[in-house]
Amino acid sequence: MRRYILKRLFHMIFIVIGISLFTFFILHMIPGDPARVIAGPAGTEKSVARVRELMGLDRPLHIQLINFYKRLIRFDFGESWFSGKPIIYDIRTRIPATIELLVSGFTIAIIIFVPLGVLIAFKPRGIINKIVKGYALIAGSIPDFWLGLMMILVFYVYFRVVPPPLGRISIGLEPSKITGLYILDSLLTGNIKSMFSAISFLVLPSSCLAFVMGGPITKMTISSIRATIDSKFIEYTKIAGLTEKTRKIYALKNSALPIITLVGVLFNYMISGCVMIEMVFSWGGLGQYAVLSIINKDYNTIQAIVIFMAVIASLIYLFVDILYFLIDPRIKEIEV
Image (cartoon, rainbow, N blue to C red; front, side, top):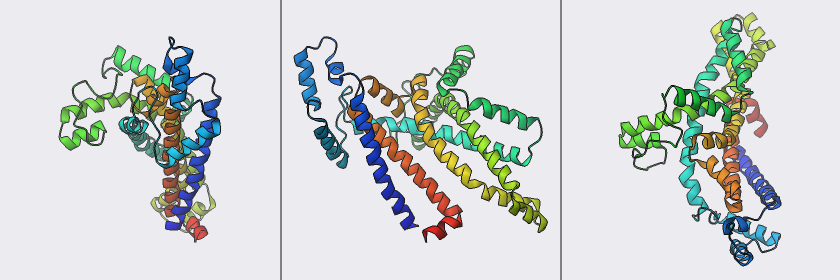
């Protein structure tokens, strides 16, 4: 097990290096001069040149790359060019908002749509089956930002059952900061009013994420379980006289791997999906920070966010690999 994890961590190093290289060169190919953006429309050529010198953009590209990796080894991403604060501070401040949104949306999707897919897989006929398959088809074709706007229009503008899409909690109700996760901090400090306020703000964006992600999860769950049920070894268990309950358990265990793979992929997809959701709901998380950095051509911040997201994605895939190792005995045999 330890050898398996160390091997995956070793692969992660090369993944992060490759992504950081790609990001570095792509950013320097983008048209426009960030020094001119920071100097402003009234900036003179002399002031633009001074800003470029302070940012290190006047140096050769290979020198900039070497300096970038020197800072990366020290986990020093520098300062944000438009906020003026250390990038690591900005990320640490904003990441709790993104984590809260991701985890809540992911939890809703798993709790509702995986059992729904299992139910439909074992009972493939009926009106519920048609409704779920229709939903799965629609959910896969709806842009998440458009769905977020429609949910705001219906539930806030028309019915007024949710708070305005302006942040994570009502002004003045922020709980004492422990983790940065408002719901968890409210529970830890016993602030029930803050907890309900945070939940009310979280309902729409997390439901939007869950709705979009639920379609692929439901389809994969149904197809994976149906393929297992129709396999020869399940037919053999039926001939061998095993009960229907036992056959269902075997079917669920053997169809778990494709579902786990898809869930891991979708969780990483949700990280990128959070970008537009955070912009629509003014969430103030890492996704919104990334968009602002791109608009302001903040190279250091964009590189830091991309690397940070790459590490998170790699860790999620590592977690999926560990689940594979624990569930599938064939992987243990290969690794041994």
